[in-house]
Length: 148
Image (cartoon, rainbow, N blue to C red):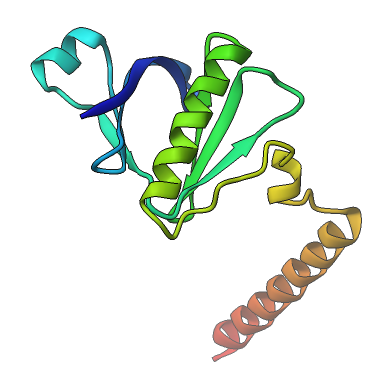
């Protein structure tokens, strides 16, 4: 049984960017299925689905129409037609996640940058120093094998 269905754009990759998809939220199964078009949904040709058990909804206060779903260490990015449409989807998704347990219903004030903090220059410098140390180890090991 579909709780909600309609069009959203889904971020696919850097090459293709945002792609139109037809989404169907099944509250009973706890799945958000998507199709390349409504017609393909009518024919049962599903493009993919997102399991919502244990999912986290991310809200970006900077952009009124986008949100994310993070589940099983994977983040899906969505864009609604406008802020009102986004709110409808987020409300239904949060209800489905809560219904299926082990999920986390995000407060409406949650910002995406609070979910995953931005790296600092100190973090960058530390990673760079680690990479340099590993590079030096590889160079030293290569020299040993060349001599042998």
